[in-house]
Length: 245
Image (cartoon, rainbow, N blue to C red; front, side):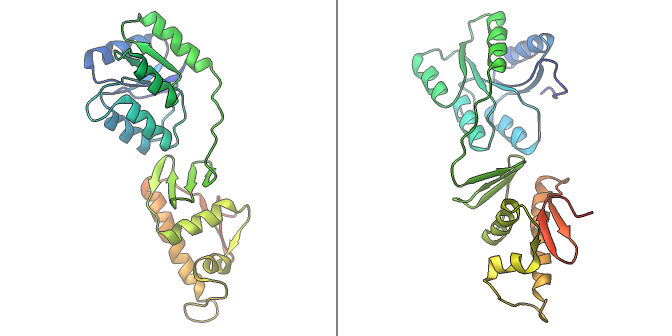
């Protein structure tokens, strides 16, 4: 696997189980001015791409690989928020494969018998195309690195799933969708119902909210040790964003 650095022409992800072809193709693309991150199968690629923040301009995928096809990998990446263009470079040149790849959102489909110069030109053409706007389902909300799916009550941060309870999801959803600071009482009422009192004294609910936010932060920090998107407003509550100065 070759680490990506700042690319002069583009950052490409190559997934192919043919070790010799993958190495030769990687070397040729590097010489052509691209940065290459290469993988021998879809599982390896998916694990690396969904647990790291990497610059990606184009996927180059083989079709038939151990553990799942390139089409399966593309479907999983699309479902996880990866919308960069994808090109299939494969020996499966029958029309039905090409139709399936294009229907799944691939932008090109090239037979491996074609020369490198043709592949290089098609890569250039793929990178020159404007990236189409992604139409999100009505239940999906995206804010920066955060993606909320209200239908399934799931959260991802930088394309990695954050395991939250239903209540924790509701709080993240509340903070992220609001453009303002949220008070302790408002956050607590979201979970327990309006005017519900818990803890000792009239302000006892504050301890519950602090503990809840701490648990949510810890879960995001497991995914991203630099997570700091839940800010504190001392004496008032929390907000989706940096701490108040």
